[in-house]
Image (cartoon, rainbow, N blue to C red; front, side):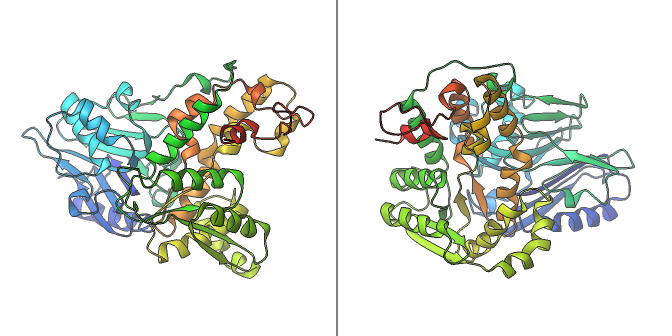
Length: 449
């Protein structure tokens, strides 16, 4: 993962523009403190910059922007990503193509070189979290795209000179763009058409789609186990954020169980690290400690005071670029710094479960299954402005990557197509004869084995 900038149509001299891009890229260096590089075309109008956090292929072969040299002109791209199925993509679409790096971020450029485009159909084969900017010198084509749920942040804007800008955080755009906005999740922009196009179109995203599929608890459990296991992919140390609640405890439990068998995990043969933070004596710390002891993780507990939380607010808001989610972001921000200081670069976290399964208390007031489902869709499709934004940016303030298995594409396709009546709360109903149908009941039952 990293920070990226892409610019098309910038006015001014090559040297002056390069200095500006370097300064703007520096504003994203907390996202990628391990290396940086900048590329610009001869005219100084098109730029791609990258601030690197080394996670997959930590060698210089994984340094970005990537290039493919061709007689007719280079292909240049930078990607902020964890593409969990990148080996599958290579085997299926790039057989025989020599790629000089094991980085998952290398895949888009080689797909573009072979097929002449990154089609919507091709994007639907990607499995992970990512944003990408790519430029084809021969066609003068610029492409930008973002993952389905918007786990990786991306913003875009227009300069007074007509230039089009893309960046991982708004702070890199604000001085040079007269207008800028969120680049929407699941969309792609191509300079050849000038159109923003939705490439991710699952059936559940339609507000009028009310599924009627009965829950398959085994399939639900297996889909979540697969979502967690694929997120163990790393060439650097990895841990789990553990609050002691249901969501993070399930993530930790599955990670602990599958860490040794994961083919692409750095930490095989080592105990799983879990992390929690809070004010001394808080119930979350007690619960996290109990879960860690039960699972047998190597648990790390940290504390902060109210004053330390208040002291962090100004810097925190600068990093997350929002006044939403500040309360929840404070402990995550303070914990991220402690975790990174221990040499951990990647953590798994439990964001998304409440939105997918209706875990918030106000869901008890849903008048019917139709309104319950519509609220689930509304919450999930806006997570890039709320919990996901907070998890990504508060961790990346210190170059720590957060992964969210509850928002796995395949898991969402299954879980969001369950009849919403199965997710609704009814304290009087005890489907198993013992436990009331409380919030996230089916998620609990899927692991009640």
